Length: 205
Image (tube, rainbow, N blue to C red):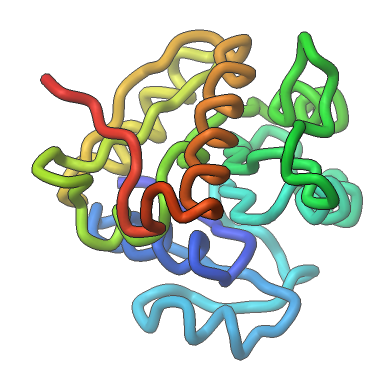
């Protein structure tokens, strides 16, 4: 069991909170509006961004730009934390490219800004609906976790265990680039109505 803070109370924040609560973890949800944080999951502790961050694992359930703003605000509160980036850094003005360097990733950019935290990439290839249902088609929903710290990855994977979905180690933080490309493709397919927002990529075992 872990102590998890989720920053963001949108669809993904609420879905990740549900996964974390189902896994038996202690969960805090923070949002700009504390009432939205409270609505995200009644079993979580709710608060506003700026309140003390209680989790050892901190999930940035925010778009990339908003995530950068929040980590700048939180500053030293993130020292020593496991910081989970779920973003897909899409250029929403064109919906045809990513806004990070071609050889980099949002996770790498976040890691540069918070060198005292351990950054992981996870949840960016999952839609909120598949986190809630626990399935993608006939397969169990799987969260792919990338990062350079084996203990941090094990902590997040362990926190997901027991929630009804799966989590696997996806390699080093360098794999965040490929995960973000996959997440980008999934978003464009759904936005283009080639697939639905209740579908997604699944891992067959």
